[in-house]
Image (cartoon, rainbow, N blue to C red; front, side, top):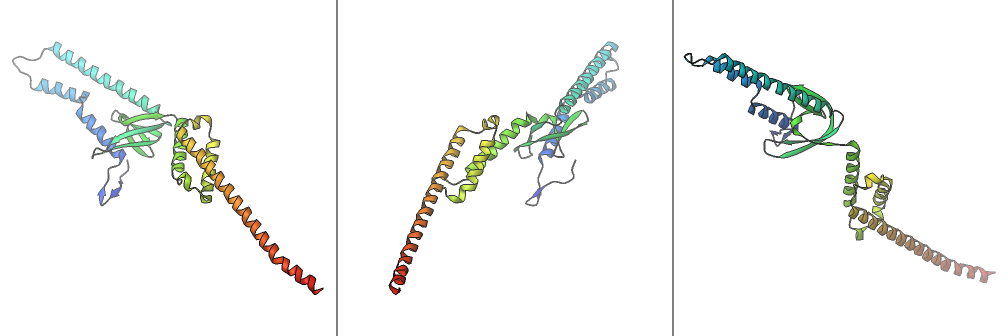
Length: 243
């Protein structure tokens, strides 16, 4: 575990990993495990009424219960380890709650698993999180398609209103059109229909802007040619008179 923590406004901020580990410790302390069961059994033997001692049969029954508790805990630990190990290499979301009650979601790939004191911990970006805080396991293809569609939508929303589009927005609109056209059908399924309609409006508006710019350029060239012709005509006339 890292010995450093972020600081904001001169105060140490609890990381999501620290919150996860701390909450796990609280959960462990609040339960009745085999050690607590054994302590109760020993205390009962020490402080039993000497005039009415506990029978051997009852001791054997209690010891059998202790053995069952131990076996159940061992089975649960083995199950957690197997479950955690199966997550190595998978993309997951971990849900943690800070000391202030704020909920945070951590997304990343499980690099390896640590098993300590009967508890499994997932390592994500070199930080440990309790297996109990696992929220969602995500297919990598699904996550990549979702993120691509999300980034695409964010970039589209950063464009000015359709009516305010000019040639300075051409590169961004062309790039978004290229990104969408290169998406697979599966990836396009993550893009909302309204988003696609908005993209088409931008493409159409840009085509209008470009056409207007081309017509303006042609008109300007025509005017310049006419001015040149009008300027050259008197010179031709003068040269004819001199001859």
